[in-house]
View 1 (tube, rainbow, N blue to C red):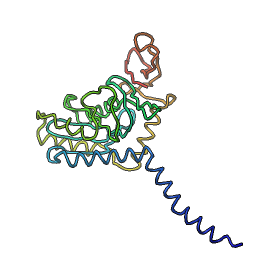
View 2: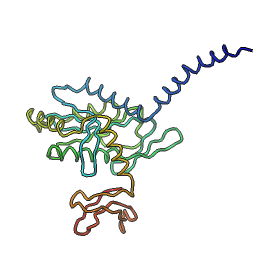
View 3: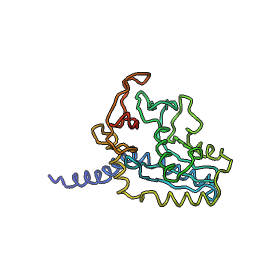
View 4: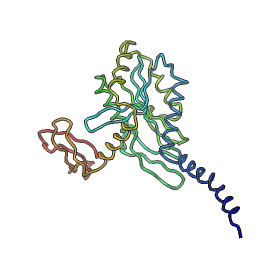
Length: 256
């Protein structure tokens, strides 16, 4: 019996089924969801923020004392500098300004993720150091895309969809001249790491190293080694943190 027609038919089905399965997996991946979220924010900003007033940079990687930090979006204007962190999530979101981690509830499952306000704080400090800015003119903005619903009251700078546009436009007092905005834009373009695959890989390695409790760390103030210490008293008793090995001479501390 000749099985070649059956084999040919099966191969024909696999030839489109396998790519379809790979595509379905890609569409569900965190990387693709994140990419779509970033793309939506760029489109919203392009449509709603006048590029003559709000100068924009995307995917900005800056050097820091412990490696690098990667910033989703920066909008520079006479009304201030707005640093935007994007989260592409669905389901219910629970959190507060001071919590270290927020919760995403999707159907019957719950997932913890870092408080994006804390995550964005490091971005603001990197820009502050790069530009030598007064921090009061730097504004942290978070936007959630993907259909999530806030189930707890969150600060005004934590927004959904195009809500970040309204928040940015709510600042109407000029604090910078046009020349200052242009100078800061030039400084960020010069100070940023090249937006290449190699930069992204190095940043990913830095993130992995920072999350490794066994990795060596250097104190950004005095250059001595950082060691893991434990809070001995108070409301945070038992909580671990990175502290300078020369304490009490140097009192630098970083969260784990």
